[in-house]
Image (cartoon, rainbow, N blue to C red; front, side):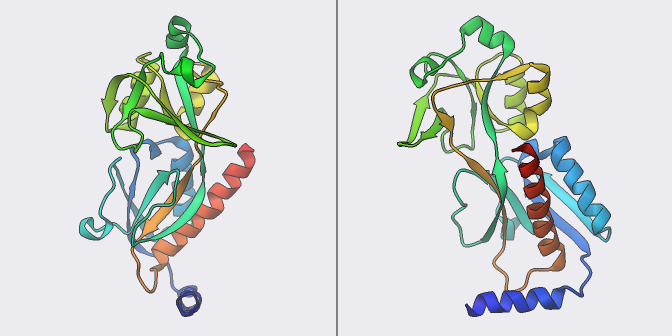
Length: 230
């Protein structure tokens, strides 16, 4: 309770302080998409004295050792660490394949049929060669043969477009491809496990205005975006 009180007091004190300086952020490679870029532009128009420095990398960085102010991470569960975390919004992940691949190999409807297909595998996922589903009875994983592995989501995205297999990709990245029907979402008996976007930052007593304004802005902005999708 005392910690929360101190954070409230710090917020009040910081309200009169202008957000400025370099804000060093780590985020997944696939955040180089129009939706997130528009959010950055809107933040900069509101806080022009903050210089955004984005390092797009799919690995988990060490914020303290590598000098990042915060990291943006997408995961089914809240990041477990000694760092502070704040949930920003839900991230819709989709199991997709190219129209060409699905026409050649068929449209699976069940996990058993799915296991006959090949996947495009992401190094850094805890389910690297598996797809995690959930329903009212809990979670289930389906293991697929792998056609290609990469530590880069953009490479996986391009491999999916090229018809090399099925992949789990974020809607933010593939929305245009779904509209143009270059990619199709598989309709299965199970749904993919829900993931969320978290802001992760170091455990400091008082957050600097550049960090607090950015995290607050993302929570506000993507709450509105998510509601418009629903």
